[in-house]
Amino acid sequence: MYYPENHKNTGISLDTLQVKDYLLTLQQNIVATLEQLDGSCFHTDSWERPGGGGGVTRVIEGGQLFERGGVNFSHVMGEGLPPSASAHRPELAGRAFEAMGVSLVLHPRNPYVPTVHMNVRLFRAFATSQEDVFWFGGGMDLTPYYGHVSDAQHFHQTCKDALDPFGARYYPDFKAWCDRYFYLKHRKEPRGIGGVFFDDFNELGFAGSFALMQAVGNAFLPAYVPIVDRRRELEYGARERDWQTYRRGRYVEFNLVFDRGTLFGLQSGGRTESILMSLPPVVNWRYDYHPDAGSPESALLSDFLCERDWLELTAPA
Image (cartoon, rainbow, N blue to C red):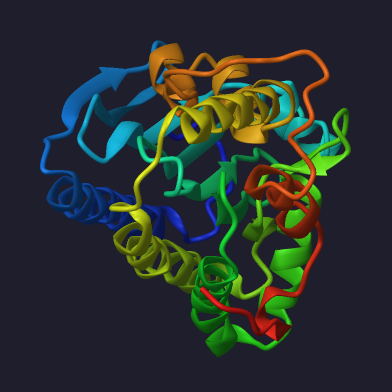
């Protein structure tokens, strides 16, 4: 593992190895489950980063269920923080760093199966005259093309169940953070129905904060797989497919303009192919398009792409 000379170790060096072991195991477990769901195998691509570190990209394209998807592990390090990491923590500018995490995005073929994103990560900034700084981050969020209240409720309830053992405030706080973060400011609309998101998190100490991150990572499959099973056999046609590819444009816009992980990866010299794996394979834009009033497509915008307390709702599936 990379360590700059004369840094002040806070006793977390061995613990970061435990984080790395967990992340690699999480990646493998998720990939194994997704391969069973799809019936196809993920391609494995190991890579090294000039300047320090590397990763393992696991990608599926043209699958029966997933038109495109990736489950990436990366562990990168360098001599100076990129702007995307130091802008909100200017006191860390110029420090050597290491960052490791698992990040996934799945773009299903069936428009009734939502796109999903999940990420869990550890960031560490080394110091020479002060203590090293660490924080955890992550979360998951759901981006449906056709809204179902029961799916939103299941996804959010699973997130809440994962976080409640650490304190009752974490789910509402992280849900609100997710709603703020995954918001397209130029469109004035959310990317999807949210989930949970957190960053710069170390308030439970290293062990406690790591445990919270693990709880989020471990909740991904229970949160998403039942929704896939519920929607994957629904019939769709050209209309639904056209709406899906149009709405995918919002996903592209967010990832390229606002997403901190994408910006950090590109600015820190990460592997471009692995970073942009998150983009959907087929997408279209249309000038000033508005779906017909009263249509299922219009209902997504009015009833789902809005700030809601999903766990307080009662509605049919």
